[in-house]
Length: 186
Image 1 (cartoon, rainbow, N blue to C red):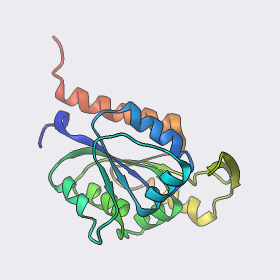
Image 2 (image 1 turned 120 degrees about the horizontal axis):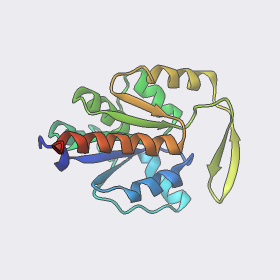
Image 3 (image 1 turned 120 degrees about the vertical axis):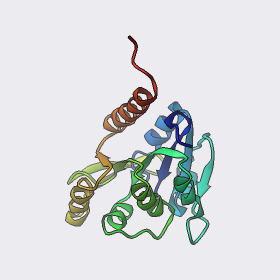
Image 4 (image 1 turned 45 degrees about the vertical axis):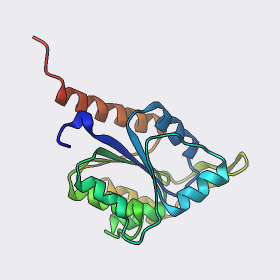
């Protein structure tokens, strides 16, 4: 696949309930999306009772993260990781790719596919959704906040800290892809 109009969006979910519902809502507004679930994401989706109906769903069930080969085949134009836990961010910052989501990020970078990341721990104090309609106060650690700042400096990586920014970055990326394949009008 060489044409961006034929490529799909890869959306990876990690094991966070923080803005998980809103992420699923955004996914449902998009076309041509494949979903990649970490082991924890599969559990959390069930725990929170959220459903998804998208293209293909890949779960972290292989030691070598077999679905990453789809990036080598040029199937995707963009990788979105939302929500991304502090654990996932830390692994990505230090180059650890030992599960499906961290492997996707590594391979997206190696194949020059841009990534958009909604990181959960972006402020000193947050309200986070917990199972059974509870909201809890969360206080990210200094190392979590430091890792967010580090990953913001990575090439082909955009980090957002709220849902409106996530939606805006996705729309900007899709518009840029559309503009690249649509010839200008005279």
